[in-house]
Image 1 (spheres, helix red, strand yellow):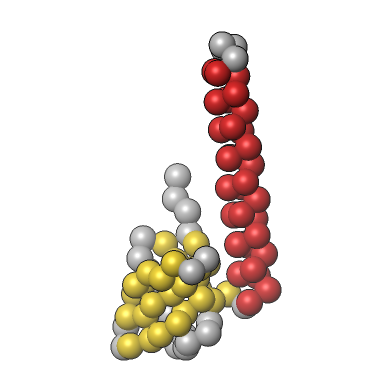
Image 2 (cartoon, rainbow, N blue to C red):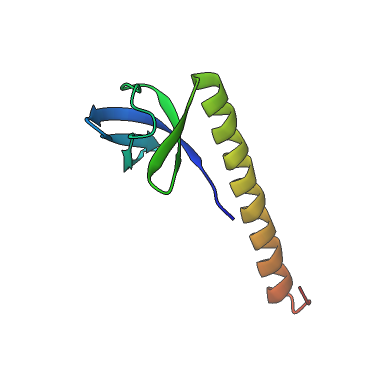
Length: 89
């Protein structure tokens, strides 16, 4: 399964840029989205910005990813609690 993540660009230098999400910065290639500028949101897959998003759409995507992450963590804790209690998964 592949997952593309929205990042906000914090710097642009030729075909390279730095994007940020949640305080984590990543280098990305913008060769497929050459008209982007600092402050734009892009979808990044495998190190390449593949699409430009508006801020609202990026924030909605990030919120969905947060919800998925929270759900996964809750499920992990439930499994740990069942194992600790000696119950099968």
